[in-house]
Image (cartoon, rainbow, N blue to C red; front, side, top):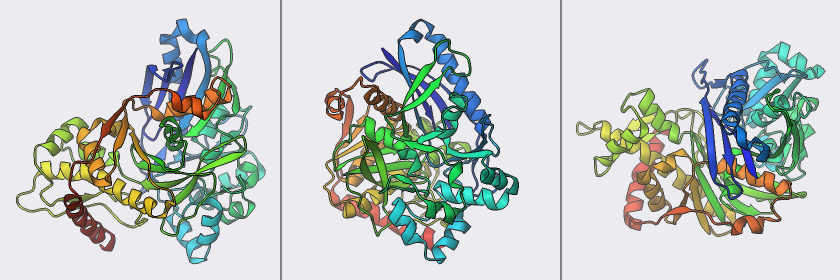
Length: 493
């Protein structure tokens, strides 16, 4: 028995095949275009994502045609806050997808904050009034696209995060549903009552009728023939937002276990158990998952620009042809020479939450060159992880027992060691980078009854590379002092 997974991320759409032991047998991927209509705006072509979805799944299955009959289910994980408005019936997108990085909703968030609505939003959603999340993107569409607003109001248009949109198209419109991890990222979902909230929908001008049914990550989400490519329909089981799916794959099932995903941005999730706790310091509370009606909650620290900083150095500044070459530049000097890169390209996340901050390279001298800038870029990721984790630790009410890492940037041994040094805890890095799709597959296996319990999953062997702290506490404090000064200059400028 094998398992098919779809991983729809910010930069690409991937199809993977896993065996029963969680080993990736094969994969296929296609990147999609990034659109930047204005500074701070980010969009994707949802139709391109759909066509890429069909292409990677069909290509993978054609290559594995002899084993298609062994596939038990298709599982799905996705970029979370990105939102799509699409036509009822056809699933045709009616506007480009507005991506989680997009800041066009800043004005609406500021207006609601000025109106005193932040405490209400935080108490219901565990999130901040921030354009990172889906609701302000939808309010922008309602206010600026009257045709779309009319379609949403009369029911001819539907709203969904990427999982909802793809499930709708995979099932040819038969299933209009999301899972609770994705719903909890919209600013429209009450994470205590576990349902869409009428008051929040009214605040953001989103018709309740346009929103999908919310199911648990382990539930069934219909069947698909991949638009006619399969003779026998394949059940869809296991749907989970990418960050929660990686938490699940890392077996962070008990309070105090945490993971950081090193992707385009970074999400740090810390399991806090079955009772929600709400922060006064900008730490987010979110649903880790819901199973058999019982929620598990997590604290989340969001880093908006993580590995994307390295891509920016490669593509925009041309410092090197590839990220590994950037790492070699960084390693060719003993330190950054006092240079700090604060990657606030679209603002700063936890603990600063400064949407107006913009990126800066500080501390340059006549001695500085591209090697120091490259090293400062890698170090900026570690500094941001430490900042977010320290804020979460102080409010969690549970001790940090484990820190796991995954994502493409874990390939950098330098970065992983730097993070372990700064965070002063062993960092256990998964040897496979595909934790999000594996988490969705594990959820699907539980939902199908192929795995009896979380305890059984936790007992399965997994291979990690462990990075232990090596720098002294004094050295860490000296390094972080310089970073804090650089952030203050960026925020105040």
